Image (tube, rainbow, N blue to C red; front, side, top):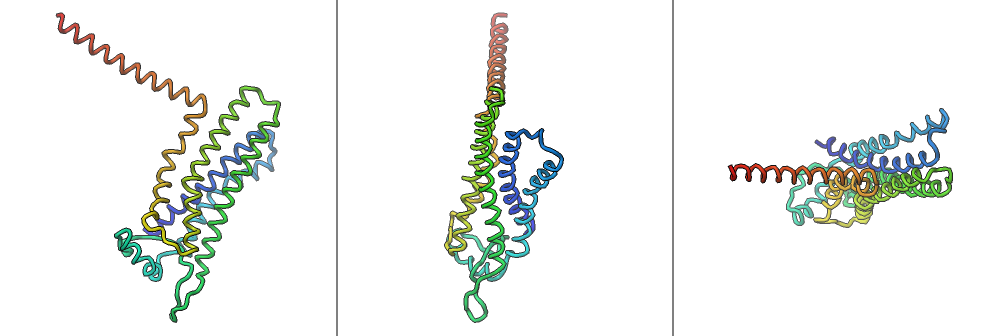
Length: 252
């Protein structure tokens, strides 16, 4: 079960890579991907392995460097009982503990926790940087590329706007909560009942993620409207048919 918990962490890490890859791919499209030569395509393939790298790192680092321990359990036991009503012995977790105590009761810096924090914080920062960098480059290319047809330019703008809003969703629901949680861990500040907020935001993300594409991209929006209109029309037709049969039965 502990490894499954770490795989869940790995999925969060892989998501950070996917967000940045989305902007990188949009940047390639705005730069005419079809004109890239073979060597550039090989480099592009390597870049698309970043989510796998992030996911592997976020899975293995907590498993080997930040697993459950007696010191961690003793440290959080009282807070979990008082604020959540949960015995830590009935839970499975991974996490940082930066300042444990040695046999003499002296606090020391836990190097493994520091390593995991640096690696995962670096991937979080790299994901945010690539989002803003390639997003800006994509926006600049679309404004400078006058060879695009009006329809193609409009489509690219719709896709870019949808991507911007779509990526702001994980930034709000994932990047910021994770960053705040990491900072509070370093400062030894307890979140209390708010500790479950990150789990809730991660669970909300898959449901919220497709909404920008559906609402902004015209073809998707029209398809949804057409489906709803057909559904309403079928419902009204069924009601009319029921009324007609009822009238026929009464008159006969």
